[in-house]
Length: 346
Image 1: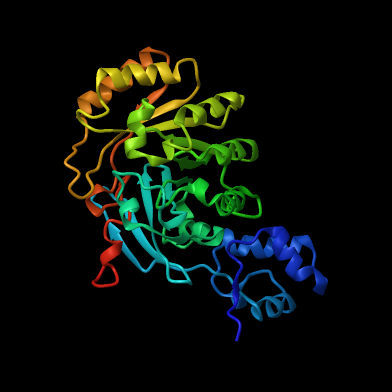
Image 2: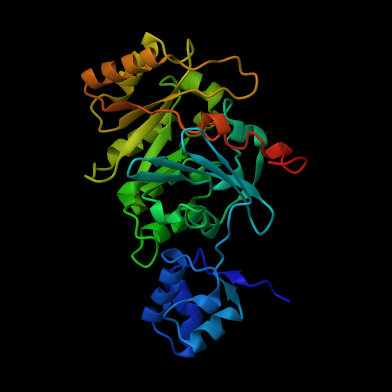
């Protein structure tokens, strides 16, 4: 018997294509998507405001497709890490970060990653498969805090622009009136930089974009972010500059700071030179050690020095505080324990 397909991950137009031959209209399709994405109904038989005829039509071939995480861990700072398993068996992690009135979900786009960044635990886990748009959206609506979510960042496991079609679809669902109705200004996609896809993203999406930079010097960046070889950061930033700044869309770079490695005065000068005259914001992040790298994060004082120096130079900058490090939920730490998950309790 054929396994029922998931409604989570479908657009209103796609739902319409399922039900229109039976006489239903677009308004009925949006009723269904609102039940899935806004009301988070997990049983087709309990979809409110839907006729029995429509319920019966959908129940024969589809399920809502909203699933709960398999395991969870809570940090001392209130953030939570959730472990999900896809219908095909892929493992991936999601992080919920409360901060006052702001409630952010950090979404994964792949199980593992194939970018090979040297200081990232997800890279060490390897690449196991792409996630679907429905699985990405489910990370937002399938957690207990779904009703609180105000922001989404595609900064979990995987490279978003290595799974562009599904990420674009997920962003569309999250921002559509018939979907989650989040503002594009509250959604950020992070990338190591894939040239053609960055251009495609900027042309097609209103969401924010963050480039993981690590170093302003290409010959150094390539040692830690291999994508630099085929997708130079200078070219990526050139593409970003070529698009007119939009009031509600933020372009930024993420700069993970490591003591004695990329926090020298020459690196600071390199950042200033690279970003001079642009509207690109710099987010300075502490480094979280993975394995036996031997590296440690720059001090808070050094990070603040970078920030103030950049701001004085006319470059917008901020220091991002660490969240969830004690449960391996912070930047660069996702997938730290997944290799052992099948052998022992999470």
